[in-house]
Image (cartoon, rainbow, N blue to C red):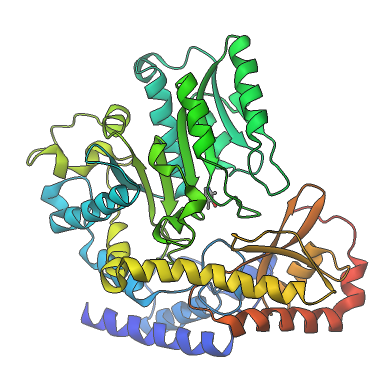
Length: 464
Ligand SMILES: *Cc1c(COP(=O)(O)O)cnc(C)c1O
């Protein structure tokens, strides 16, 4: 093991050195992947030196998500304290289902969940768990909402028409989860948004009324705290009132920006959160832990037990259920995703988490200021969002993003809202400073200058 750790250090030091010189890894067209890298598996063991070389090559040729060149997704950066926690979780290799198997690590997870619940204004009846990603925490919310509507569904299956409301701008896991949970994709009602990308509450109220009149059963409203494209926040308070009148479960999908709960400046964006039934967020997005670190909490732990516990005498042999977390989780064997969040939180404190969140909004403001002061840019997104959506000159966004990627300049993606397609620049890497943001625009401008004709020739739609 000692040698392996030394090897790990050697490899990662090399990677860090290379990253500092080349924020974007070499572009390998997918059709050339298997001829460029030695990825084949063979019958015979490999010579150790050759193995090291193959590994190093693979490492250096992999897209870089922690550098000043990566703005493509809703995560990025490499927080040292969180990385340390995750590396240690691999070394410990516990499974989080029982106290017997995970011991002290159960405490790590419980402390985080308790603190999150308290910060949301919830009492000791509230509880939560970690799941592999925001899609899965949304899934857990939907299953709890379904079983809350009728607990018999667990054994009998879905017999009625259950309706889920979500905005047109919400995450695609909602219809997927409707299919997984037996509710059905066609039972998802997509509510239009206002110009800021927030759910239109009048349309929501109308839809609920119309469904009731048709004899359908409104079961769940999914609100988004940080929509995937614009980073918009659906209003929570008025929706909770509406939902209470009809006994509908309210979930807030905060995978992207739910971490505003840690910021005094931005917490008002999720005002009313203390009244919802469930809430989820990804610490691997705004808080910058390694993937994945997804939390779901519910105001009443009975829902987690009702939907996810199964008796298994071979597993739950000791200790009180309160410490056997497997009774509230989606999986059986479960990775320790809590430790990386704990090492981060423990070291920087809640105030440090707040700083991380606030800094991302500050960087987004730097980007919007830059855009607003330059007439060659058009801005499509709004304040209180860390997704900065824009177009530069008349260059089609997808041609620009693809060009920057293939030229190994920048990794950034595009999105659309209404009739407009635009570049979506996400200032989620809290390790960046204002200069990195300004450099981003300079690189993009220089690239456009040099490749303008080529970019404009690609005006036709490219299927992705
Ligand atoms: C990222 C995201 C998800 C999905 O989270 P994963 O961890 O990628 O599964 C769900 N909802 C929203 C709003 C997101 O931004």
